[in-house]
Image 1 (cartoon, helix red, strand yellow):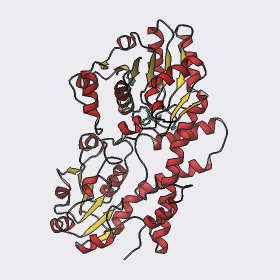
Image 2 (tube, helix red, strand yellow; image 1 turned 120 degrees about the vertical axis):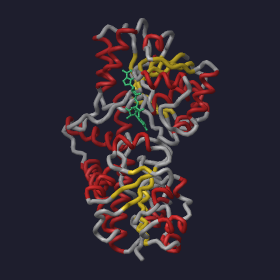
Image 3 (cartoon, protein in one colour; image 1 turned 180 degrees about the vertical axis):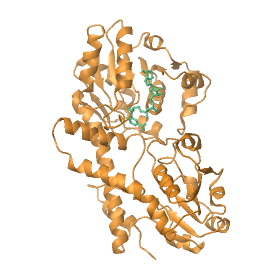
Image 4 (tube, helix red, strand yellow; image 1 turned 135 degrees about the vertical axis):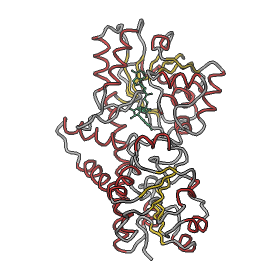
Length: 436
Ligand SMILES: NC(=O)c1ccc[n+]([C@@H]2O[C@H](COP(=O)([O-])OP(=O)(O)OC[C@H]3O[C@@H](n4cnc5c(N)ncnc54)[C@H](O)[C@@H]3O)[C@@H](O)[C@H]2O)c1
């Protein structure tokens, strides 16, 4: 099948490439000329494991193309996906749908025959209805169908997630859309990935419900971590103790500095706006957002306290800047309020991230960037592990301690055991773990 993919970011590029890898012919289109120019030369605009090789092999097989021109991408296409950004609108937390509607308007003027328009972007419930109206209003041909196909991939494991999804969710109102999406995902269907057909509105809302639930698990375990610290219990063991229960499950039960990234913060807020408009209270999600905001802000104080209450003029090494490992994404990363809080308290911050520096630099000021974890530790009085990159899991702690002028290790991801850190001479501070 010929497919056009509007938006060549984390979701559009990964989805388009994987669909091409299934054997479809995919043309990815983006307004960002530099991005498309780079892709045409084989340069990836994002850091995602395995992506470069998969793009190359599908470009070589002539199944994957890139362009800035939507008209070109639409030639012969039977389906067009919309995978543009839907960030939080400044001020009110609503999903900003301006990119979606701009893409739809452009599309309406170019369509010559009925096609299936599939929204992959995360959009509030009812957006599909508005897209259908807008297409009609702007002169799209009769018979164009609008479906919702939310994406659940995780950055850092995006290709595996797309190719082996827990489920494929399709919200469709007609047979044309259901048949087209069943055909598009047939290779996964054959691998027995469950394909769920729902109404368009249900699919749109399900995506928000999924993210809100995962955010809830994170905030829950973070509050449990606080309680563990206060009463002398260990949140790692507690998480295992509840996570082994199949009704609960072990994932998203890692205490840490609060969730960030391109999805949870904006999607929880957008869900609350939807609920406001429907005059329905969502007390749980509303509390989750509050708990997470406070948690992120509290991380700087946690470091200051670990250093005796005063960080004025003191050098602190920060390991990891991206919101999670295996991505260069800095959107809403907990490292940002942490570093800003430390700087406000007078600390000098030196940071290292294995791939995130380019994205991080414009977002942070007065930060010294080191070329390695060891470089960030050189001369520092404390080191703070903020993102659990694999390469931070096997640091030579003796060497790290020897490079520092102090001996405080603040492990916001609990990747070390107290014993091994103390054995290397550190004063160790994990999250939600038994003290001393
Ligand atoms: N990043 C994730 O992990 C993830 C996971 C699941 C769902 N989502 C959702 O997918 C959507 C896309 O997210 P993302 O992280 O890929 O965003 P992104 O910002 O990385 O990419 C969006 C791309 O769309 C392009 N674009 C915007 N308007 C355009 C237009 N009219 N025509 C062509 N290109 C246009 C931009 O230039 C950009 O390259 C969002 O709704 C997001 O919530 C993201």
